[in-house]
Amino acid sequence: MKIVVRWLLLAAALLLVAQIYSGVVVTSFTSALIAAFVLGLFNTLLRPILVLLTLPVTVLTLGLFLFVINALMFYFAASVLQGFSVTGFVAALIGSLLYSLCGLVIDAAMERIFQRG
Image (cartoon, rainbow, N blue to C red; front, side, top):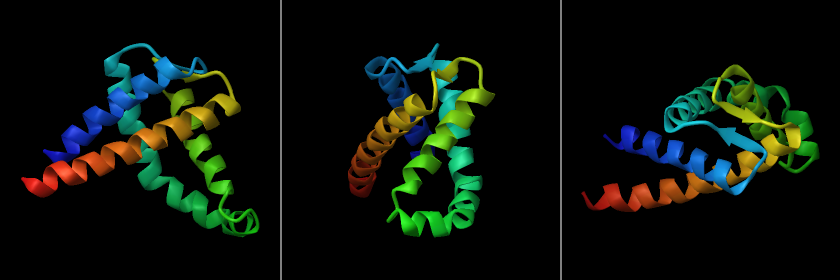
């Protein structure tokens, strides 16, 4: 149940990002659901490999390169899906930052809600 609620909230967060920032376009809630699922898959499967491969650069930049990796995941998801697009790498960077901030808020809220239950 917790996973489904988080997925729905992250899809809503993606729609919010599209409303806040014009560089990110999501055509429908269904597209947002699919995009949130694909972003979750990419972050689960591809992100650890990319972090490991780029570890020297990440250490040299004091972790700032992780923002680039997040933007690449966001950009790659948008390039694979219909109904979800970004206008370029800078839009993917800003969109991924906004989406990550929404994800942090969602995770904190869900921790409080499901902790009581």
